[in-house]
Image 1 (cartoon, rainbow, N blue to C red):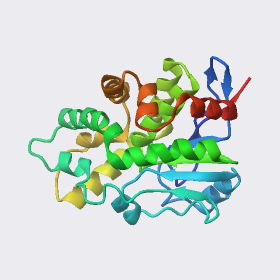
Image 2: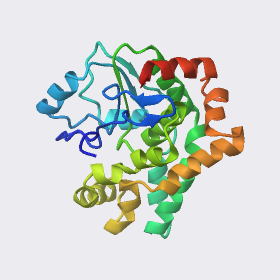
Image 3: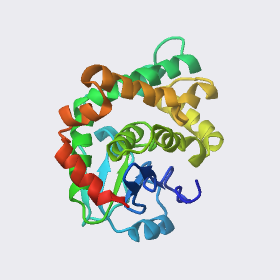
Image 4: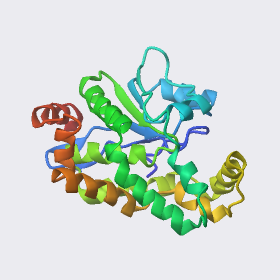
Amino acid sequence: MQDRVKPLEGVRNFRDFGGYDTPTGRVRSGLLFRSGHYNEATDDDLAFLNGLNVTFHVDLRRPDERDRQPNKWPAEHVLRVSTDGGRQETPAHVAALTQENVTPDSIETYMTNYYREAPFKDHHIELFRQWFDGIEKADGASVVHCAAGKDRTGIICALTHILFGVNERDMFEDYDLTNRAVDIEKFLPLASERFNKMLGTNHETDVFRPFMGVRNVYLENALEVMSDAHGSPRNYMTEVLGVNEERADAIRRKYIEA
């Protein structure tokens, strides 16, 4: 874990998701990074990030999230991708937290349903396509992130691992690393206070716990709906994201070392 997770002060969940074995070698380290947002990045964080030679950056957040917490990084010369999609959409967590009888179990159910819907949201598809387009062409390192670097980011990183041929155990281990990379007990009361204030609610702190970490069953549901609709997550990448085998081979050659 220590080699993957970079201990940044103001950026949560920043880590390298290369370095895993594949049938033909190992995914290169230092080229593929994932994280939460960069609104609270410190000067020391920025100095570290600027030393990574990042040339491609995808922000998976909705416009309202970007407006509320604008990134302090990367610099202007980096190719940055985001979308206006989802602007009119009521944030799903808001809908979940403002329904009647909110409990930790109801939020876990919401999270499961979210993962089943996420692969087919138009603005996610647009950004997922651009992620694979970008890493195919990038001449430096690439970063993908959302607000917390765990759900939307977790799905696209899992797809990237599937494309490379990373085994399922390692793919889920990387996904689950959020639960150790982020001090959930530290941030849980802060999240509870922020959301309750924003929404005018008075939920118990534990209601927010499912938002703070990940469970393998969430990702399993995302992969399951891709398989239900397209036969497999790899077919989803071909049929929905346009990553055919020729392009997949080009990406593998670029990122996998013998």
